[in-house]
Image 1 (cartoon, rainbow, N blue to C red):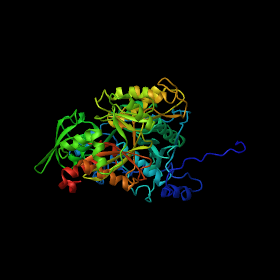
Image 2 (tube, one colour):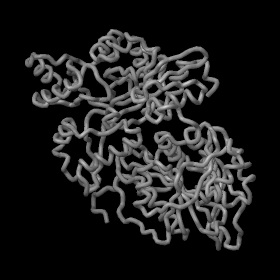
Image 3 (tube, rainbow, N blue to C red):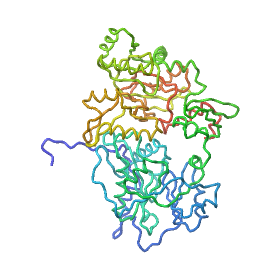
Image 4 (tube, rainbow, N blue to C red):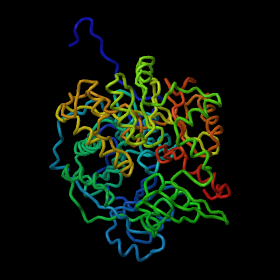
Length: 595
């Protein structure tokens, strides 16, 4: 009971008010006396030739097809930009022999959970709510998670269309603090769909946003779906997972899923190309930033030659034109422009001449009195190497001379010249400018972890790093270094502290993605004055592809301070914005019609 004077905190609600039409209509109108909603009659036979539209593609349940030709015929009806899957194929070798140029064996493993022996875990997640999908805002959130995970998104009209989705169940994980959807899973009730005599179900599209702060979201989504189907009296839950997805396989085995000799067949299309076509030489050694551009070029029929995979170098050739690139840095960027962006002090002077707001800055030299006076004037400083990238050697919020000396020493391990800047509170905004136009804008936030009452800060950081590494192809990890120690010490913590359940802390102040920071798209809401300032900076440097970094109080407001320009912005960080497409447009404008 509430005590007198106490108020109940309002529960975080999903953004958006328009409900998913079919689900709400089902709750109002589908129930009939004497029969459960959507439950097939036991006397009904198994349906034949069952195909289920999932929004990102269709699932074809091969066990319901009487012959291979009918199944192949249905697969040939795959819509553009979709990924259809024929699951439970009994004799995949036979099916493949009938259309070897059209279909391929999906390199995935099938796992099964026995629901009759499944025991739910009693522990409840803190700071995250697992619930059913209920609004169109939830549907948008699911697509954002899919995009961040590199998955095919659900088409926009899917959830609002009038269709029978009684066999489909969507669960979402919602961050209680931000209201954002940070995870999702889809379940299919085979008994409701086609009166499955085996009373089975299947799990699809388990996805957790790579920037989600809370551990265990994927495990809880799987558990929630298993409990849901167990309550319906179903016998098992199947799923298909890529053979090399070691983290996912480890999770499923932990939850007592077991391998099954069941197979899936897919069509040879552009989405699936990497699974059946001969890859570019050294393709697997490319980092995600280079791979994104190579994939876009390949889709357009542009010839790709990987010249140094480890360094991210490749040459694109088409129609007599050949351009050498290192990720998003290409030969269209002049040496002068690159040298300006590469030196943070020079870049600051150039954009200041163009009228941009810049922070007060000095170079850390031997004059201790000048350094002390600069610190006293501004209270807190940012220390960074004059040249460098990926957040190396940067310390934020330095407030004492001792900490300043340590930060300068750390920065000098990256570059002999070290810059001291006035520190501004706010959010780190990255604007990606290609051909002097905005393509993507995103707020970058420092890495944070949430305690579970059992794990040390070091263990929580390690779990977060593993998720970031998996999501970025090894490009992002939270360093356990002096900067991390300093940030924790300011909060009265250290790496051995066991963080209380639900307590959230910042483990580094720099928001760079390579050191574990997260990114949140604001392209649709960024203030036009910020866009204009970023484009003006790109023009001043005369650089066709650049990431302009501002410190802002709110990306929807016009106020900012210029931080730096990055001549090789990571385009893969900004999906679903079309960064790779606009980059290839710049290099080969005649290929736009091929997209």
